[in-house]
Image 1 (cartoon, rainbow, N blue to C red):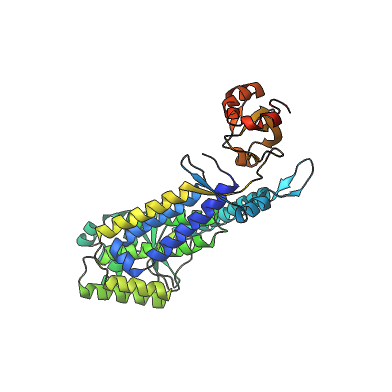
Image 2: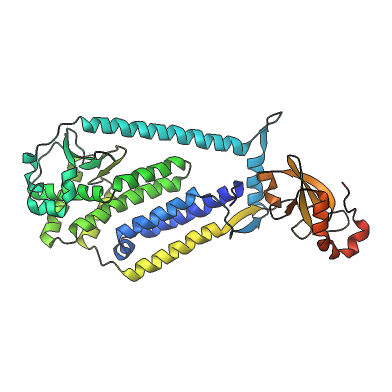
Length: 400
């Protein structure tokens, strides 16, 4: 498994296109109703993880592009500062990528810890104020509620679950009817049951690593939206028309009275985005029936696209070394490499034509056989030269 500038660029292009395709297709209410929001979340996560592995696998096939990718490679390997310790563009880009990622990571971790400290000192809501959710039938349906703590936040936020460890449900300082309370708490308990905060933090981590890729910001918004739809569907699937109407009234009322929340590591009951809210309402009213066939087809299509994204790597074309007046190109049939200290000597039909270094510089020659000595190479490569008898008078076998 190799990693190079070509594999990183290829993965960025194919992975982003795959993720964008998934985001656009899964953004359709009709598609969501057929495959289910939970399955859509799984597909999104699979496509996102692809970006973490910019590797050339054993089955990967190279496609060569003379202009675009050659220009990209030449840009990245261009040396800006020359001297005893030269610095190439790719090294500067890598350093910037790491530094910004570390900065954003520390900032988000600090913000998360600050939020958790705030939530843990908020006043706890007594059970007598939440009688509706401590009734036996509700506890039987959502037993996880006994593991959660309820706190009151004196701001106009929508209710939300906060924290990976010792999670709390943060409630705004407003009155809820018994039915509204059951809807709100049921929704947040589902976030807890499904480990949604973990997946949200994982998505935030991906966005932090790929801060330079706008597709991840688009993906994050879609994914968080899908998590809310998933819980809406689960919560309302057994509700009557009247109960669904009450749930929608609760949802719209909270949106009207709150400004949402921007705390890291939380899962909220509602969002104020009008397009997102409209789709949530439509899927609550008409959720549709999940079609197993559609799930299988969607899974196969995404799996094939994931495989194809790992099966190709876009490569630049490299200089086609030739022996004067012979017109023979360098490839695995005509050339080989010989170790020479920290470098490798390049031979074309036994003629020394240059040197290369380990790493990115050797990438054009990775298909050539490597030998420890020239004598070993000449012995094992001898058969190849039998195919080029007509050039024998022009070859200087073993010369440097």
